Image (cartoon, rainbow over all chains, first blue to last red; front, top):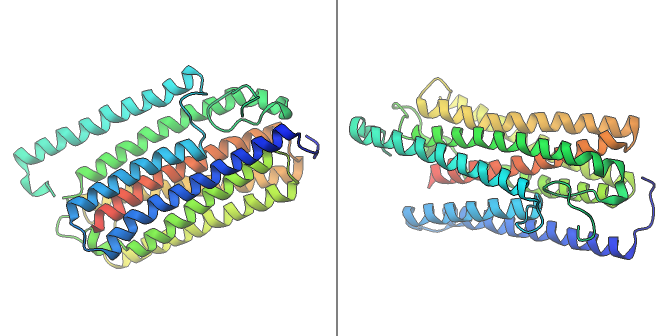
Length: 115
Length: 207
């Protein structure tokens, strides 16, 4: 654990990983500024704005996983990828199911709850 | 990462760290399992929030209570803190001078605390405008989701302070290194959850 000189290979790796963080930060900043900028400065139609916000959020989440949490499809062992994909599956079933069932119920019984 | 065996998802310490690199396999994978279960919890609170959007019961709604300016400031603070923690991770991995590592960690901590202070100020303002959790189903759902994220940031900040203490007392031994690896995952993860919050709650609520 001593403080020592990095080998050439390590120095290359370090530069590479620093670049990863910088790219991640830059992309995340842009993907934050786009929806905030459109919401504040332009009279964009609400439906379009919702789409832009949603798409930017999804891309930004992928950017965070890729550049900050270093999740790539190629280098992970199978169990790790399965862990994340299984979580996404559970989320899709439970979140999608909750929204589907409750809004169906609202539509039939409490129309005032549908925004 | 090219020449080292990948032990777990995310940034690996690499062979130069010997024992800590070996020890991190189980610890970091276990932490990822916890993180993913936490993600499901947040996902369901998001779903609850969406189903409660119409339930303002005549009380103040999103457009009256939320301010995009403060949401933007909080987003910036958290995003920059995520980046500075990344710099701390690199300083740890490439054995940069310990002062550099500690400096990045302290910057990260200060940004996290600034985020929390700003969020508490926001809640205080909401309270003074009648936006209390008991007012409506919408506000109950809001105060279940957003302060839970804030509570996570508080916990992560306390953990960071504890790790700074560990570095001061024990130096960079294996438990400290693996602790920093796990806190890095938590910190980046909390920023991912915040992306969901500012998009769905703040931008979606005021659009």
